[in-house]
Image (cartoon, rainbow, N blue to C red; front, side):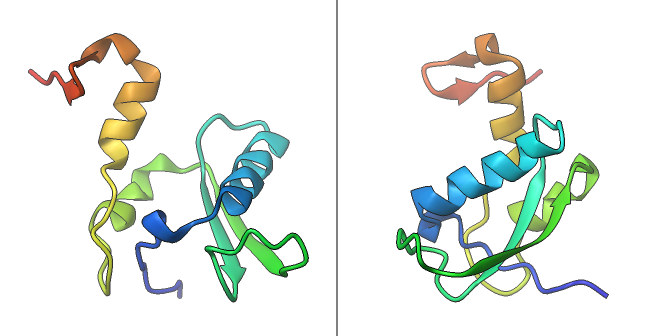
Length: 98
């Protein structure tokens, strides 16, 4: 059934970013979408509880992060992937596309 995509990118704490990266690496992936459940995604408190719902290596479904249906500005996952995979494609902070 799935959930409703909400963009919380600007709110996520360093702690949860590190948790997501560790979960991605733990299953041998370089890129993944990590679904976390927590009361406060901005919390740095190490005592705060959370649950990893899913680590998804299917990059086909990243459009929900670019255009969230309920709230949030969205994140250009395409630009992030291109910048990471092809760093020479960035000149003065702008991605070159043909």
